[in-house]
Length: 267
Image (cartoon, rainbow, N blue to C red; front, side, top):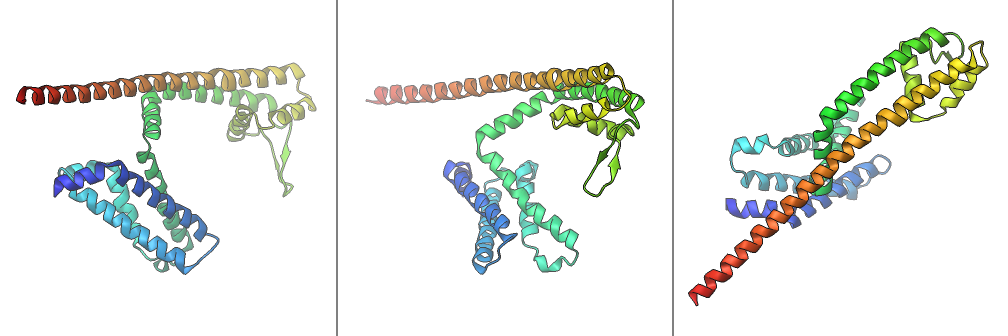
C-alpha cells in the first residue's frame, strides 16, 4: 500500500493534476473578490476536498512521521487546509478576515514545486545569497553615506507637493534622503529632483556630480555586479542539472544493457 502511494505521489500526472487544482482554486479566489455565486463556492469546496485527498496520499506515502513534517511543503499544505476549513463567518474583525484571505492565496506558491525550472531559480538565489549579501551591504553603506551628504548639501533647498498640497523635502532627513536615492536608482523621474535643486542656490556642478556619481555606482556598477553573481550561479546550477541528467541517462542505459546481457545468457 505504501509503495502504491509513493509511486502515485511521485508521478508526473499526480503533480500536474495538483497544479491544475491549485491554479483553479487561486483563480476562483480572485473572481470571488468581485463576483459571488453558488457555483464558485461549490467548486472551492471541491478543491478543498481534493487538497485533503492529496495531503492524505502524501501522508500514506511517507517514510516516517518525522520525514513528513520535515518537508516544508507538507507543513504549508496542512496549515492552508486547516485555514480553508475555517468558515469566514467566524471572522468578525475585518482585518482578520483580510489576513485569512491572503493566507489562502499563499497556496499558489505551491506551483513553484511543480516546475523544475522555478526550483532551479530558487537554488540559484540560495547559492547566490552570500555574494548578494556582501554586495547589498556595500550598497547600503554607500546609500547611507550619500544620504548624509544629500541632507548636508540639499536640506531645505527644494520640496515636493502631493495632491493634498502637503510638501515634503526630498532631503529633509535621512529617511527621505534614502528614499530619494532609491528613486534615483530606479530611474523614476530622478531628473525632477535635479532640476528642482538647480533652481535653488546650490551650485549646478555639485548637483550634477552628486546625482551622476550615485547613479553610476548604484544602477550601473553595483546592480550589474548583482546580476553577474546570479548569472554565474545560474550557469553553475545549469551545468550541475545537465550533468545529473546525463548521469541518470547513463545509469538507465547500463541497466538496460545488463538486462539484455542477462536475458542473452539465459537463452
